Length: 334
Image 1 (cartoon, rainbow, N blue to C red):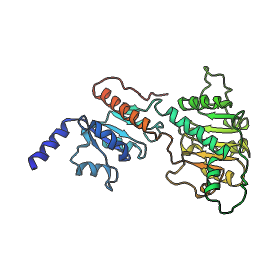
Image 2: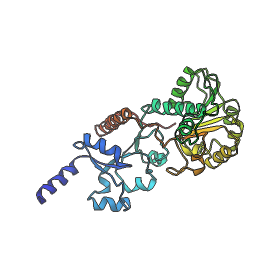
Image 3: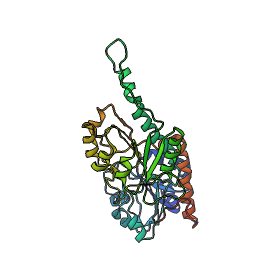
């Protein structure tokens, strides 16, 4: 038995060592398909610091050449410095704010993302949240299922989606998919992005406050950076107005969450549909009690179809890297 275990360890050392950072649910599915190709080392659930974890698993930090991360735990400068041979970070999320891109750039570490893999799923969620808030679908469900009194129904009116002016904050892959869907509902699309897009005819606003003032709803889909932290602040929300709706499918910290809670509680904005939160998994308790707020547990990318496609994409990027070929979905400097 000892010889057998030694042989397994020796075999594992011959195949690429990959640090898997994040919840094991994805890696369980992924590693079952590619266990013969790679040795995945996942410290999830271990109370030990990463260096001690690797020591207890007989893994030399210098043996790890790639990291696959899900975004729950950040790939920081400290993590990267612990792994001197890392040359690739594979992200399984649309956002990249959990990766120290500056350190990766300094060390010439390649980074791969998901490209447009999630764009349709996230756009579907954004439109779904907007419809839910405007037509009070979740509120209506609670009214029916929690109703104690008998007699006629007396439920408040919702709002029509068609004809509404929807401002999209971040007209990238996801934002364009949101726009396409909302146009089909008869909405008028406006947008804000880092730069004006010459290939679209939607009105462009360089100032988010001005966009909010012209919109009935804002759908937030941009990346979280130092520049976009709390981009949606009190001034933006007041400009959106008492009937305006916020939908966030980007990152929680794009919105000043405390200010949003206050605006909702005081009726300064009309409602919100939120798939992301500033301090996940914490959700402000005030939001739970509001009928004009719809909440989702950062689940916009969670479809079985996308999980299978993601597994293939991660494998293709790893294969390309270890074969000295260009990555399939490289993250390039802006």
